[in-house]
Length: 376
Image (cartoon, rainbow, N blue to C red; front, side, top):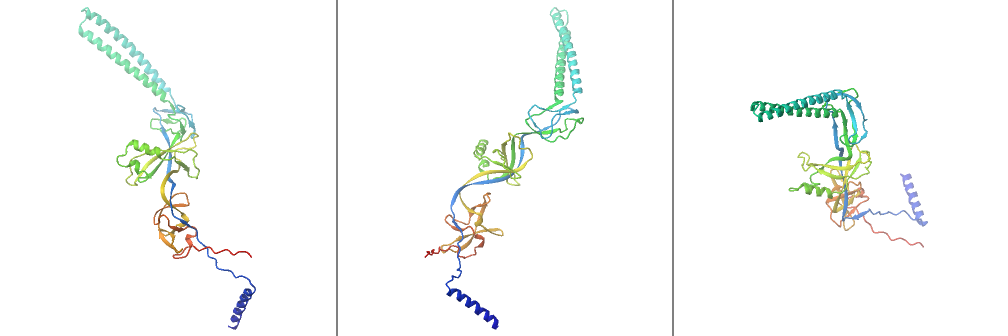
């Protein structure tokens, strides 16, 4: 006990000695928290929607005739132009059918010619009362039947030519070749899928939005012209890849389904992006960013908001410079640093920003600045 008392006596004497020597002791420092005055402003909110790309004119390629696949003229992923040859099917049977059809046409034409001569002869003889009207009618009917046979034979020739043309399959649109599940020598038929050509000159990003977001375009009585005008007034949109890369060309909203999904309360939307370099492909998933303007809203930094379970609060500075917690509701702007306040604050309120997580209820957060001592 004597030893402890002795130690305290030494410490007190040391402090007294320092003070007597004119050495200043450390003073308590009062630090102010950063604050801001809440006010309204106009901002642009980047709304983000998950989307999937699809070619503006994706076409599934299937043969229209049966036969053996003799040539595949393209590779997967290849860019092709409209009319370019993609596949060739063995055309020997189609050529034989065409030749047979042409021969039938010649026979039908000969039969028609004979029937015509007989009809014209009987017509002259009937006018001279040499043959009866019965014979004239029979010859006329035979001539009409021969003409019908010629028409049928000519149609068969045309059909055979079309079938022969179907043996060479060309690209119906300009785009990119998808997967090719067939190989040379395979037997194909009209039900066989050869590939898909993704018409990727323009690409559609398909996504869904809430009904409330585009309420103007689907309000009761809105016409197709109203929708077109609404879409034309929307700002250009951006497509962001899954790896965070932003596509270089802007797109436009070009389609609204106009029908609200009863289960989700959402609408289907398409935004069309130009794809001149072919960098976009069908099936790519990413994010469509739609910048929407918000007028006259209260914006505060995210650091001012303290989260307590399912509630959010900020510390409002009262007239006596002490802080009091108020509950607020906010909307995330999407820029990673700000919130829109929808309730809980008023214009002109002063709130704590930097340091809000360290504030206690009733704590003084603003202090008058101490006068600076002049150097002597």
